[in-house]
Each structure stands twice: as structure tokens, then as C-alpha cells.
Length: 398
Image (cartoon, rainbow, N blue to C red; front, side, top):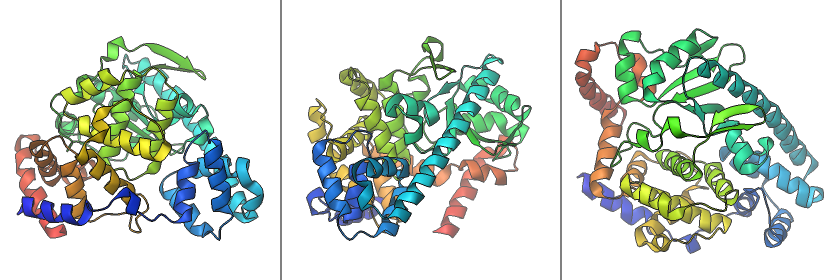
């Protein structure tokens, strides 16, 4: 039955071809502005699109959905401000300024957290948030983010939790002390917030969601002890190799089914800011972990949307092309929340083989989400009984 449903869903969804997708002018404008550097041809297209009778409310709504309002404002203001309604440009400017203020506050928060954890001999590795804005975009103001993401060794997870709880942080998910070891073993992150500023923080010891299967333990993608130290804007931190960061960001996009265009912009800007990326090394590592198709889908989307060229013959793979076309079509779909069947189909098809795809789908069905840990009151010794509860809960939902 599962295979039949997947086949029917494939007939329904895979038939989409990129050339058949009819984008609204507002959607095209967002795609043109979703970058830090705009060439002359794209500038002319932006001017032409803005001269049309645009639905500005729809444009702002879609840019907000994809977290691209800062780039939309900067590019419209620089290229054709006189053609944009004053109220629209004013609202975008206000959001841009508020985003700058928020990002500066997050940067200060990051400095404090790195110092706090470093004093406890934890090896924190920030990899998104303000650092990605500075390293990839070259400007703290151009990236929109809502939390800080910090990787730590799994062995330091419980110590990190205790340290933060004793230093002014609360947790969004209250995990019982007796469940901590099991939680760390089966989940990927603790979610905190600063009790004074309310800023959110995700401490992660695994950069994939719990349902994402790999051929090896991605926890060992890199060695925390060997990461070089860097400083940027008074932030002292350990730096990931750009190839590893690209892999991590691509996995993040796939885990969340490419719901935000800004996440692709992140990867595109990171690639543009690093000329000497070792592509053969990157794909060799991706293949070893069984995530090569995930990487290729991201790169093909970036190639089609942003015009970057990659020296990779595997981008011509038929399955990769079909999947990227379907994902591209979903960016501006009317309903952001896809059906359960279409989400399951995509989760299944982006994997290297049907075994890994099936394992991912089974994990989605059986493993608790972080929020569902609030409902787990049984002893860790009887945790296996939760699988039955999870199946019954999903049955009631769907």
C-alpha cells in the first residue's frame, strides 16, 4: 500500500516541468532580489517587473514567508525606489531597520554564550545566525533569522543544559533530569530562551533531525578539537570548513523540505563568497554518508535560480532534475503546508535508495518530536512502549 501511494503521488507531482511553471511577476521579482549582488540583466528585469501592476500585499507576504524582506528592500531601494509605492518601501525600510537592531542583539547574545560555554570547557561551534550573515552575505543586516544555532559535542549536551539553566536561560521543552540521557541519545537539540531578552537559542549535538538516516554517524563529519579558531566582529569561535558547512546547510534544507527560499540563498551566498571549494572532496564525503542526492538537489536549485555553474556531471541525473523541478514549483504554491502524503513522498524520494527513504518515513511515524517529550512521563526503561503510543496518536490525527 505504501509503495502504491508513493507511485500515485509521483505521477501527480513529478509531472511538473520547470518550463511549465507560470510564476507571477511578484514571484519573479522575489527570485531576482534574493541575492546580494545583482547583475545588469537582473537589474533590467527588476525594473521591468516593478513597472507592472503588482499585487504589493502578495509580494510582501511571500517575501515574509521566505524570509527575504531585507534583500527585497535593499535591492528595490537601490535599483528602482522611485517606482515602488512609498508605503511599501517605508514598511520594508522599517522592517529592515528593526532586523538590523535584532541581529545586533543576537550578535551580542552569541558573544556572551560562547564565553559562558567556553568557561565550562565546552567547544561551541556557531554556524548560522549572525556568523552566516557576516561570512556569506558580508553584511549582518541582509540575513533574517530568529534564533541562534550552536553545535556542541554530544558528550557536553547535559553539561551545557545545566550551565545555561543556571545562567538566566529557560527551556522551551522541559525535559526531566531522569530523561536527559535518553533525550540526548534520540534527539538532536535543546531549545532555550534568554529570560530577559526572550531571544531563542538551539544547542545541537546532531545537525540532522532524528528522522534523517545516513550511512554513517554525521556527528563525526568533523572533529571539534581540530577546528581552527577565528575572530570576526569581536566574536571568537571555531570555524567549520566551508565544504562541511555546505553539507550541513543542504541537509537542513532537505530536513525541512525546502520551505524557505532564504535557506537556498544562504548556500548560494556562501558558495559565491568562497572561490576554492573542493567539490570532489565534498561529494565524496556526501556519498560516504548516503546524502549525495540531497546535496545535488540543493546545487541544481541554486544553479537554476541564481545562475551559478557547478563542475558536476551528476547534476544531469534525471531523478535529481525531476525532484528539483517539483521543489521549485512548491516555493510559490498557494498553500505553504503540503499534504502529509506529498511530504512523505518527498522525504522518501530525496534519499539515495528506497531503504533509506523507508527508514526516514518509519522514523517520522515512530519517533517522538522534541515537543512531544512534554507528554512522556514513563520511565526511560519502558521507552520502547512509546512507539505504540506514537502510532495511535498519528492514527487519530490522520
